[in-house]
Each structure stands twice: as C-alpha cells, then as structure tokens.
Image (cartoon, rainbow, N blue to C red):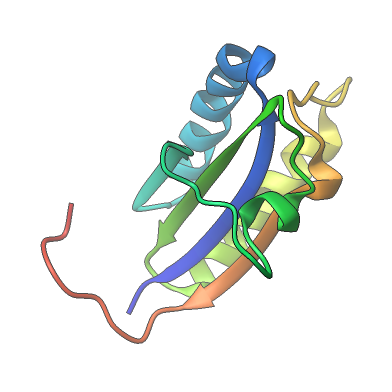
Length: 121
C-alpha cells in the first residue's frame, strides 16, 4: 500500500497567493522525486471544536486559513529517499525559502495506509 505524508498548517489570508506559488514549486519537486500525488486544500468548512480542532492544533489566528495537504508515495522507502534528496536541495540553497506561514506551527506526519477505497484519482 502507499505511504502518506500529511500536513496541517495555518496560512495568513494575506499570504494566500504566495502560499499557492510556493506550494506549486515545492509540490512539483515532490512529484519529480517520486510522489504519486500531492493535494493542497484551503479550509472551507472547518468547524471550531469544543475540545480540539485544526485551529487550536495550529494556533491559528482569526486572520489565518487552515490548509490540509498530503502527498501520496508508492511506499515509505520511496518517500524516505525523496526526503533525503529534497533536504539536500534545501541545504544547498544559497538563501532559504521565504515561507508564507509559520512552519513551527505546521503539523507533519508520515502514515502507513491500511485501507484505500474508491477510485484512484
């Protein structure tokens, strides 16, 4: 089964276009390095929970939009190799990328799939 990298972050609404530019570039690099699919989604119907929610998890402000994103890889080994290559590319950059969000509040995790139903999009 595939391997998934999941991301949840808060992006200032004023940085929406800049985030989309960065996402297109970064996500294209993931695909070049073997990702089968990368999805970026703006929060559209994200409820505030009573105990926890995406807003609390990312410490989002009223001026920020939640982004939910994932990358699908053939397997964990492919993902790990891609991450190593991409980390080296980032380390070799003369200047670090100017991220349009606070990366310290981004939630990131790798997940082994155990079930996949429906069409393969």
